[in-house]
Image (cartoon, rainbow, N blue to C red):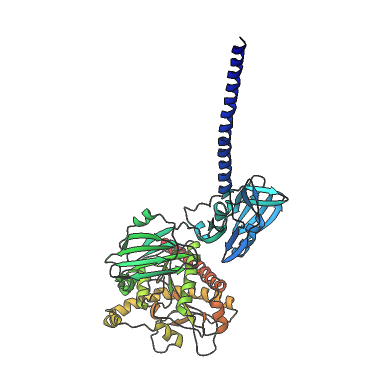
Length: 548
């Protein structure tokens, strides 16, 4: 009995001992797994000792703290380096900061942890479009830490939220802990095709200060731009034009390459970046653009009986162009360049006022004088304005306005002789006006021109009066001269010499954006005044005709 009792006790002790041994052997294995998990977490949460911000080639170290093993950077250390990039910020209240970058403004809401746009820049030209829509508000969620009266941004704000604020890409190098402000974010590029019989213009709305190259082969033209266009490739490739089709569009690194396959209609291709509108324009010209097949003299005579009740379409002729520089100042300023700048500004202002505008040249190309008249007539313009700048060996200043004289070419001033000269080419020498010397043609031409002389003079008086007031000079009056570019026009026309490039004081003004806008305003106001004068005259004519 006693032996049985000891046996039972021994068995119980053995079972307890076995359980304890088993427990001891399993416990270290559990601890080992936990230790390994902790070590892995520590390895994954390792951060560089220092963080840096690279802006415009300069290194700025970021002040930070670790919260739950996550870096948070002080707002000052993030925003201060960006001041050189145009960012500014200031505290508005305990719960709000105001942030300004370029012409955009934002609010940093510390209560709701949001950055919201309060003012977004919109180009004035975009507002004029019928399909214009205001930009949608930008809202950026921000992980913020408020501690010791300081604002801290979570580290991923720099490459997730900040790019939407400054419109630039921000990269991050894990090895060095460096954030890099890179190039501008890809901009949505809008494009527009305008096509007429003699030419086509493909316009890209671009970021400012782009560089481009255009190379022409036999039946292809290759446009390369040093910016990566964020563009709807399918829509661009689907463009249908009688001048070209787009064979390919390549986005390579930071470049955009467009391959134009040219049709037989295209004679010349050129490109021009208009810094006034931040637009890259590609021009496709037919042979008819340079040599319009229009019998200007006969057409002018047949159109005499056509009565227009208002002034709607304005033809702007930027003087010279291409190999014809026009006047050149001592500082190397070329008349052809300034004339084109003023012409573009005038076109924009007149369009804003509701007029249709055609330009005889849209880029730095040479267009013969008689062809400019042909372009104006074939587009059925109502007014013709040729923009020029003067030069003189003598000390001279002020503006001059010319209309056509029918008195011949016996004596002309240096200015008229200069503006009438042509850049001759082998092709020009082979071409001769078939109507030249014909008595019948001269009579028809004389009739047509006398119809417009009085209107040209009235329009010229408005322009000259405005330029006199702008420059503070005495009234020189409207001058008449046998200018080739005005000969044969089916509309009233003037040639405006906006100032003297040979005069250093006037040269400085003429090359300034603000003064060019003043000249444009004078001419545009003169167009408005002439339109009112013309409409009243047409109204009187119609009333007198009805009374008869």
